[in-house]
Image 1 (cartoon, rainbow, N blue to C red):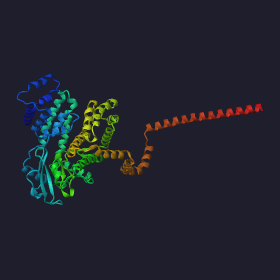
Image 2 (image 1 turned 180 degrees about the vertical axis):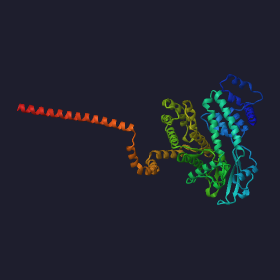
Image 3 (image 1 turned 120 degrees about the horizontal axis):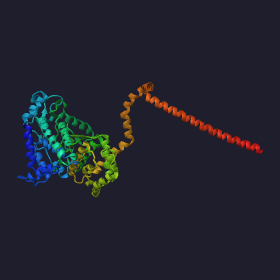
Image 4 (image 1 turned 180 degrees about the horizontal axis):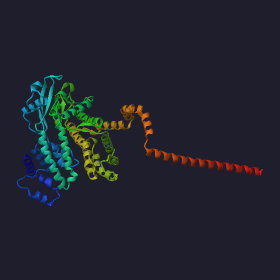
Amino acid sequence: MTRFYRGAFIIWVVLRYGLDELVLSSFQHPWLRRLTRIVRFGRKLDAPRGVRLRQALERLGPIFVKFGQVLSTRRDLLPPDIADELALLQDRVPPFPSEVAVATIERAFGKPLDAVFTQFDQVPVASASIAQVHFATLRTGRHRGREVAVKVLRPNMLPAIEKDLSLMRMMAGWVEKLSADGKRLKPREVVGEFDKYLHEELDLLREASNAAQLRRNMAGLDLVLIPEMFWDYCHTEVMVMERMHGLPINKVAELRRRGVDIPRLARDGVTIFFTQVFRDGFFHADMHPGNIQVSVDPATFGRYISLDFGIVGTLTEFDKEYLAQNFTAFFRRDYKRVAELHVESGWVPAETRIDELEGAIRAVCEPYFDRPLKEISLGMVLMRLFQTSRRFQVEIQPQLVLLQKTLLNIEGLGRELDPDLDLWNTAKPFLEKWMLEQVGPQKLLQQLKSEAPQYAKLLPALPRLLHDFLQHKPHELRRELDSLLAEQRRTNRLLQAVIWGGVGFLLGLMLMQVFMRLRLW
């Protein structure tokens, strides 16, 4: 019955915000299109469709807001106006009662709150759709007296999520069956992708491990601070980490007043991102202003502070090479190479004509070269490539969609800090260094070093393995070898005959010459 009421509420919201036009207009059945024109009473449809969709998702609650945020990253599937509007969705969720947070903490640790913390702020400092954060001070253990931030999962999240996800799957099935664009939009795959992200965010231990990995990766860069995780106090529902002291990065006027070098801050942000992408292949994939602060502590003044590690992106060596070569070819205007990379990666059918794909890519990229390099958006280039490649049946990889979304965030943030930021000149050294490392002797030595332990184990056993193989070689191999030997013997006999025939012929010629001379003499 609860599911029925929830479904009825969703239908009411769809009608209230005029989403029937958006949802039903592309449906194949004429009676559904007629319904779009009939159901118009009592509604204001003045706002653009993207605005109405965003407002509807906000009305449906935190899970749908989260879904809209994830959907906004799929610019390869959505029209630009809808994707831009969904990108404005923010988690404006009221905090849940502090008594509930305390009960969750005590259940997770199996002890009273006072046994864990000497001080615990009852009012949360931040509240979002998945969790909220309280400041506290640890009482015991090796971290006694440390100021910490305590992230607590919202209660009863899993049942609420499963209920809304089941409704989303059902609606996705309708869209796929009834809509003319259903197969191209892949609604069930999008809901499945959202399901994966959401369940990963529900496990705070997983988020803590993401933070720990990023902290290790960034340790020697001296540009970004990532809070230390206190593993003795980490649980799937509660995460305790080092408290960070900083200002939100979007408070530019206050940062400038305190003496922060804003242009340098913009360059450092790009450096951090490209280091995570091209050096580590492991990057923070939710870098919007709400998750980024700037340190005002004298010891670390002006450094970035990264927060919220529920979503991270990973790239393989193949992904990194694809990206580096694409960006490099783009700035050289080598559109044929960009097209070849799409085919070589296997993301377009092998029978795709290179010249047609090259022409489509040229149409996307060439207009950018009428602008200064500092005005070129790498994120927009990547997005346009994804959108253009759609008609060539490109299979866009999820990790690259996350990268494109994060790159757009970084570029927007960087240019908000410094309108003159030249992203390409900041990124170019990373691309060139990475390419050199992939094809140079350093890469060969690195691979030999990494494979050395395997070779060390294999070499002592190699004589025995060879002996066993020769002792127990398959009959098919023996027959093939015998056949090759017989053929070799026939070849040898033929060669011998040719050689002896040639020698005999030469000897005959010599004897004839001798005979003729004797006769003349």
